[in-house]
Picture 1 (cartoon, rainbow, N blue to C red):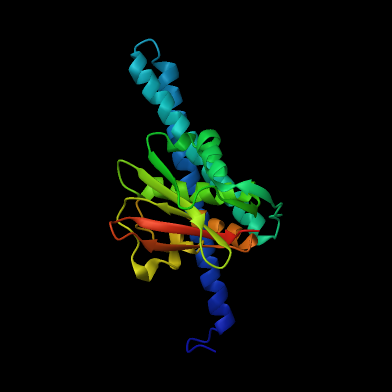
Picture 2 (cartoon, one colour):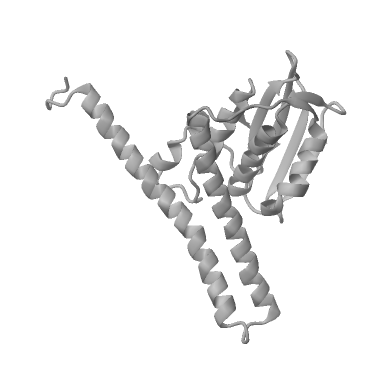
Length: 242
């Protein structure tokens, strides 16, 4: 029992409730922010379409579309975290060419990455592995989204992939931002980090990296982080060849 008469169990429950309230408040805010921007941009476009130049109309439509992508990403993250917590992620492995898988993601799902410079390099020629392509692409997408948020302007993202040691494959995603202090490198994979750090400037549910790690572990892999010697954070996806 604690000195104020509260049991350890009571203290834990109270802290969990506090974090839950912060989570709900932050998620609600992060969902409403892009929605308000979408509505505002489309309302101006609709009400002032006769006075607006074609260029200003396009800016409003582009803003609405980008915010719609952001809102979709937030909702998808919340649903994915719920699936992970309830063991509803079912891995369906198949033999994949990792280079093609990366290019396919950029081509078909990379609309929010427009304006970013993305460099893909193979460390050892063609690489095949037995993975769930949908889950792996989702993990890659979460790292790319993180790189766009925190990688600085202009957004430059380097992707290297190849075969490592112990029958492991790797995909490294490097941004050109300030990097991550060593003391915070494990904390950023916690789903609660976003809610504890109220001073973060980039809006987001804070679930992306936690989901990425959870999905990689479902495939008997992992995701780790380090800093590049020339600057920027480097996230490394590791997974078995097959």
